[in-house]
Image (cartoon, rainbow over all chains, first blue to last red; front, top):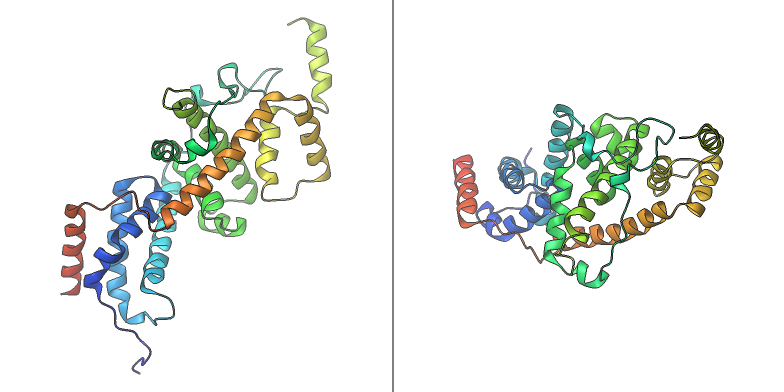
Length: 195
Length: 99
């Protein structure tokens, strides 16, 4: 039966109209430009295959974005499953043993940051540093962190997608945040860049 | 470490949580209600611990930064641009798909 509601799409306009937008959307979530490029390409390819199912209920942009979002989640799942989520001993923030276990390692004690909040938030380089630090996290940690804190997905959803319990999730989030803070401190706030 | 110091620390640890536990509870608290015990443990820790106070403040700022990053990336100002070569590659793939 012919679907009378399909809206004609013109894929030849997609790259020009939405390419950069989708590219940035992906980079913000996978922290790697090559992966982002691949995901955008896959999105367009899937969209072309599926274009007869576009009902025009949302805009082209929203529709393409939702396809990309799904591909990003699939990327997280694949990435998180295959890789190790370990960090170097030298990056460990808290003492693992001894009477002071759970206390900060001496070299990892948070330093006070002196910075101008407004200026920092206007600095492109600050955001590049932020993204670089996110990309340095073990894949499973950055997946959890991004899905929960940036995508603001529900806990149950994240757990379902990544096949982890909510306890796992909090532990991973915690580790990610502790690591991130340190990375940003080291690479931004305690450098000359933060002037 | 002298024995009496060790003993004192051991005693304190029966009700005083570590910074690792405190920062963990700070993370959890943002999304899920803490149990009564957890909430008290965290409060007591935060009274005395200047490092965790610093950590908390720093994360407040970073969350603002992340929010801005997300918003900025999702709006029209796209700092990253696909290069003409990248665009061509995608167009090519699209073309062969349509054929």
